Length: 158
Image (cartoon, rainbow, N blue to C red; front, side):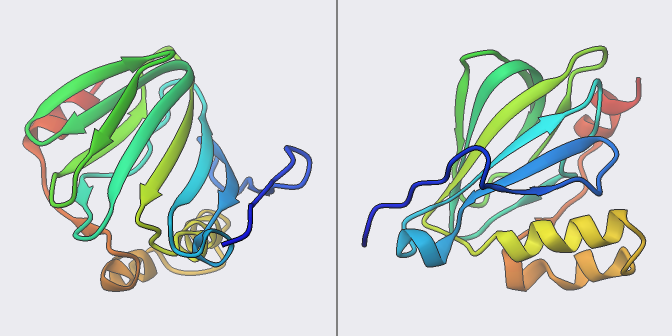
């Protein structure tokens, strides 16, 4: 694998989600399957992903700024600036900015999962260009398996 450099001004940025801005940084094709990375800036109190798990990759969260509320199994934790969390495969998780706070987060999946098309799908749904049911239909393709979490519903019912 050759090195992969993405300048801040060159990252593909998705702006369709009114609650977040997503910068696509590295995907399977550019990392030889080693990892996938994106940066997401959540607006104040914005929801991120609903409860789900992955079967193949671990997901790393690194909070660059702000505070992120995270479901981790059956527990809800708050990550603050500088905190790092690694969620192993098969562990249900969800996340969103803490009420009244923004969150700037680097996400890394290893091994790589080909995530860029998933984020582009979410962007098209937010823009009204495709139906939300397409997200559910993509669970196997993108290894996002959605689950119910009473703990997460309770935590996010501000």
